[in-house]
Amino acid sequence: MTAHFQFIDSPNQGHGNRDAEQVIFHQNLQKFSNRVSILSSLATGGKISLEDAFAKMNTLWEDLSETVP
Image (cartoon, rainbow, N blue to C red; front, side):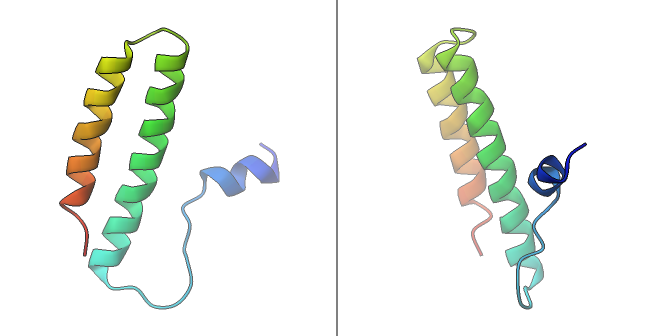
C-alpha cells in the first residue's frame, strides 16, 4: 500500500488534547463522511435511487447529531 493510501485510511489523531466526547464525535464524523461518499457513489452510478441515498444519509446525519459534544 502506498503512503498516500495509508495516510487516507489511518485515523486522524488531530492536535492537542481532546476529551472522550470529542474523540467519539471525530470518529463518528469520519464514519459519516465515508458512508456519505459511498452512498453518493452508489446513487451516481445508478445502484441505488437518489431517494434511498438521501434517506440513508438523513439517518446517518441524525445519528451523528446525537454525538455532538
